[in-house]
Image: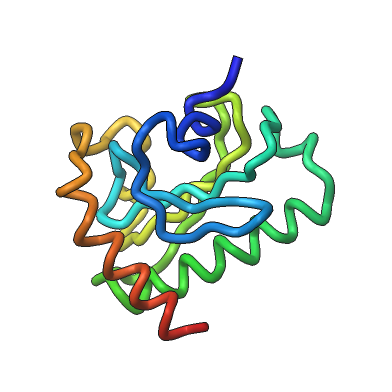
Amino acid sequence: MATIFTKIINGEIPGTFVYQDDVCVAFLDVSPMTEGHTMVVPREEISHWIDADQDLLDHLMAVARQIGRAQQEALDCERIGLLVVGYEVPHLHIHVLPTNSMDDFDISDRAPMQTPEQLAGPAEKIRRALERKS
């Protein structure tokens, strides 16, 4: 059975994408920990990050870095943090978070589910910053 991320990637469930290539996608988390909280997800369903091959991990980290640089330019934050947890959805994903303190890493303190309209503003800021960086 396809994961929720595969369904988002395939367009079966709406997603607010900020980046896509042949290997992975990046979309905003619908229940963000911080404004602009983005997930970098491989198109291939891999449950655990240690099972991914090195080339894929390198690519995902390069994309996460691009997203992070765009977030730092586009959003008011001190640092960009990363989380790779894997319990919420059994599909490898990297959380890329604009942060201002360690408190921003409290995964239990998430915003209520956001609408596409609520996510549109941060997504557009990140997309514009990505375009300026390419």
